[in-house]
Length: 327
Image (cartoon, rainbow, N blue to C red; front, side):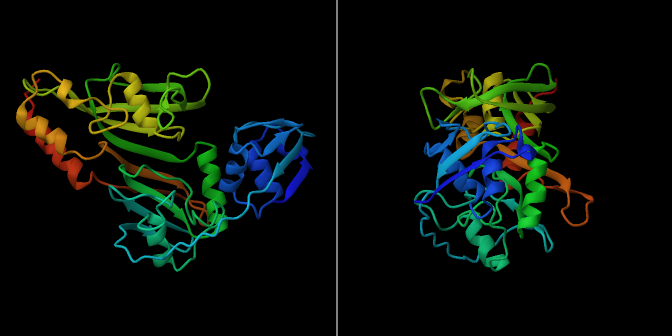
């Protein structure tokens, strides 16, 4: 493994350490740099850090050890991708439920990346590494909706900067238990790893990353034999792992079907048997990325894309409308 050492230049004062290293060594992908940091292979002025977002100062001395490259074999696979828009720079995909965005441990096939490699004939950005070609951001396996993919490194850098600056416009539709108070508002917390369940995230932390979710209640469904359920639109200012799912649970209004942060249906008193079956038939969290807006990397004009509720969530909405009572 190769070792590297350099000092932070004045142009990168108060910048994230992963950005600084990526700028100094452009041949090392950002995702790989994060792995290096999390494996405790990087030091700032002789002290280790495990936080890729840690800010550095001009003159700081950075030392790190590069990781040995794993041999990655990603197979292009023909898939029926739902393409909302495509040009020479970007492709907008409406991701279905159950599809993983990029390969992970033990899963190198049947991901969105495999389909993109076939469709784009390998014409995808490589800034996030060979295992994540074109991927700028992601949504959970069981969350549906819009994703923007970069077909070249310039487009990737241009759009990634908008994510970093929180200027990209993203909104989601979700069905949650109860009625949010106030009906429209903003949730601001830190989000970090759950202390007891490391696979989960939590807003009940004293150390973590700032997370901001704006929300508005679109409709409240009430009935005599169904719990109150609200259709919520969430507008993200930040994009933390599981952010909306964590924030809704933290607010006391977990998302329907969320097996990680949700509510156990058996514990809901007085629930209608038919409606209980409807909830049990929902095999994923009722969360959909419905809109995406940003400045296009070539035209410099604002582009905006929308996606309607997928079939399973639209079916849920219609069932709720038939079961509710007028209020």
